[in-house]
Amino acid sequence: MIPRELAWSILTEFTKSDSLRKHARAVEASMRTYAAKYGEDPDTWGAAGTLHDFDYEMHPRAPHHPVKGAEILLARGVPQRIVYAVLAHADYSGMPRVSLLDRALYACDELSGFVHAVALVRPGRTITGLEPPSVRKKLKDKAFARTVNRDDVYRGAAELGVDLDAHIAFVIGALTAVAPDIGLARA
Image 1 (cartoon, rainbow, N blue to C red):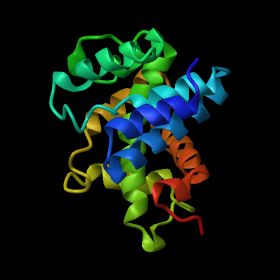
Image 2 (cartoon, helix red, strand yellow; image 1 turned 120 degrees about the vertical axis):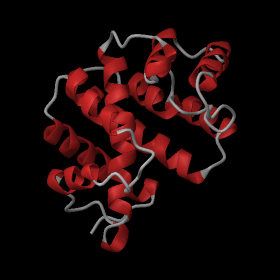
Image 3 (cartoon, rainbow, N blue to C red; image 1 turned 180 degrees about the vertical axis):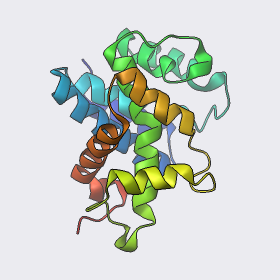
């Protein structure tokens, strides 16, 4: 287990961008919510969400991200299962996603970012009332949030064993709970 404060401290030490910090918070919220659903430890799952991209500003390109970051996390005493999940969230790392934690992090990463982006372009920048069909429609628009890998979104839900619409609704719910923290309003 790793306390939330320690994970956040590591993130903020290495990540100065407000948008990356908000992304980390969004993925953390999705992971904590899935941990509750699956009866897992929310601090462990939340830390994986918080730390998955902590090294991105230093190492924005493969294969350095997240491999170099994993070395830092291990040196800081972050538990191996969290470090492994961070490595496995990048397809190119060669680390297969073997645990539920690994699969959940992969499933939550791209989708949390995408749902956040969809909410940001809604009137009032609100997530309240956002529905899976609206997110699916935006997924088809390749020009919208073009850095989000759509294949990762679909594969993430499949690997987690959840219906994509249910996964989208679940992530919307998780992000709604932290909306002010990630720059979104609740109507």
